[in-house]
Every structure is written in structure tokens, then in C-alpha cells.
Length: 317
Image (tube, rainbow, N blue to C red; front, side, top):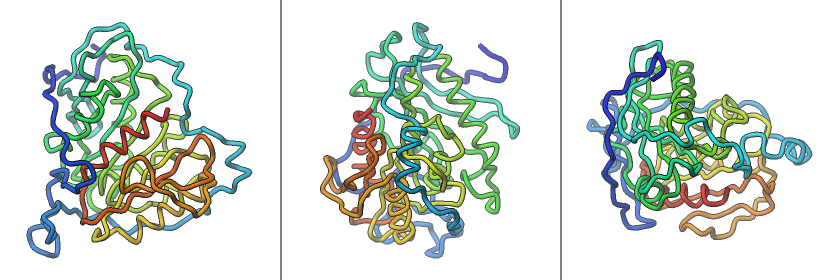
């Protein structure tokens, strides 16, 4: 074991069950105690959290720039295998050392995991006051039960990911995510060009920054219940799925984010029904950057179909 990484315990994770496809359901992230309704829950019972307003900055890339950058943020080449291929390690809960002390994370391996096969790697970043303990189990049902991908659930440093004003440590959170990714590459068999970042609310806002901050390290992102923050705007096409409920407090900002990604990825304004209802796929996007916008009837939550949308994106690589 390398210095700085301490295994809390290793175990085989039980697989959760997915809910009804297309039906919204909360991921179980704990509400912020300062929510206006007093208990942090909306009338639909969905867990809510607060993040600071988005900041609009740079203009998205034009089509010529997209043609030049292509799949800078990832791509379909799965040829490079991680150093962990051929090793025999279990999934489970572990800790990783950070500047703010040890932080827990969970690694969920595919059922019948084959250490000689390079799997896509999917991260899920929780909402404010969330943790790996209340993760959306439908990701495991969609990705690990089917043998499609390895899933990692980190715990943020602070209550959330992206806002120093709310006591988060974005810089250390980024270092931690990178360190966990490296550790998982060293201990399991990963297709290093197939790393997908997903997140809800605070985790989604932070995820929206990562195509810029982790340029060349990600193959795609899936976000729910969030808009786009400043460092999330940069050059280069990347596969994106943007998810939001009609009653979500971030609905307007999610629409703006979806339009930003549409332009960044060279898509037209036309959307058609995608393979995962209610998601719609933009047309004319750069070949390396399928772009989807998913609007559902519901509030601020990670809906059941989101896991299926992640699986669909991963299966495209």
C-alpha cells in the first residue's frame, strides 16, 4: 500500500435496486439546515441544498475550434489500461489522506469483476451535506450489477464541493478527486480514457468545472440539479448530460448550462427524443461530444432515470 492511503476496510458491496425508470426520486442527500422552508425539504419531499449563484464568463468555443480540439476531454479510445490491471483487490470503503485529514470513499466493483478487463470509471459527487452512505444505489444497479463500470463515491472536504464562501475547499476537493482516481487506477483495472464524472447539486456544480480543471482526464460528465459555474467554461468538446426538474430552483440555470454545452459542442438547437426518456439529444454535435438535456416533472433531486442516462453515456464510448 502506498503512503498516504489507508484502507479503512475492504468488503464486497451489496448491490442496490434501481427504481422505476423515468420516475424521480431523491438521492438521499441531507438538506441544508438553512433552507427557507425550515426543514430543507420541498413539497415533493426531495432533498434540497443551497449553492451560490453561478457566474457567467467566457464565451463558448466556435465550431472551428471544436474541430481542432476534438476529444481533448476524453474520447472513444479505450486502449490505455491502468496499472491495476491483473491485481486482485476488493471493492469497499477506504480513506485517503488530504490536507484537511483523511476522507472516506467507496469503490463499487462490477459483479463478477474481471481484473484483466479494463472498465470505465464513474465518479458520483454528492449534494451538500451528503456522503457516500446516502449515495444513489441505482448507479450500482445500472453500472456494477451489469458489469458495465466501476463506481466511486468520494466524500467532499466540507459540506459541499465548489463554494469557498460556504466553507468548502474546492482546491483540495480537486486534489482529492485526482488522488482517488490515481489510487483506483493503481488498484483496479480501468480504461483510463473512460473516466466519467457525475454529480448532484453541489456535486453537480463542481462537476461542471471539471471539464476545464481536468482537461484531458475526463470522457464525459452527467450533472443534475445545477447550473454552470465560472471555471466550467472553456474550449473543447466533451459529452454532457444535463438533468433538471421543472420545479428545481436551478431550472433556469440548468437551461442556460445546456445551451452553453450545446454551443461548446457545436450542436444545433434541434433536440430529438433520446434513448433514455425524458432525455432529448441535441443534433449536429461534434462526433466526440453527444449532448443531452433531460427535463423531468419534479424538484431538486437525482431522479431514477439519471443512472440509466449515465449507463447510456458510458455505453457510447
